[in-house]
Length: 124
View: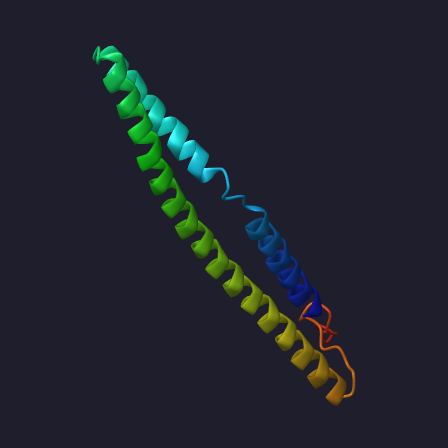
């Protein structure tokens, strides 16, 4: 029983580390570069005058920078909420493990084990 709880706690801890390591700082540059590149190529092939082309590309950089920052903040907040949930689950698993350990000690310290570990009566 304790082995399953320990494995569960390890799985939750590794999931917490994965959540922490996700880097949201690359979201904004990727949005800005990819979307602006599409607009720059599109306007270039449509033969816009150079002055208009620079204004359009600069405006798209600013617009997609704002959009990227908003998306980055939304994802960061979502990840923070998920981390808090995972942390609460980890603490709950630890609390349940401590309660199970205390109950085992109160019963005399015997490990009940699984059905396979128990001695079976002889078969006739």
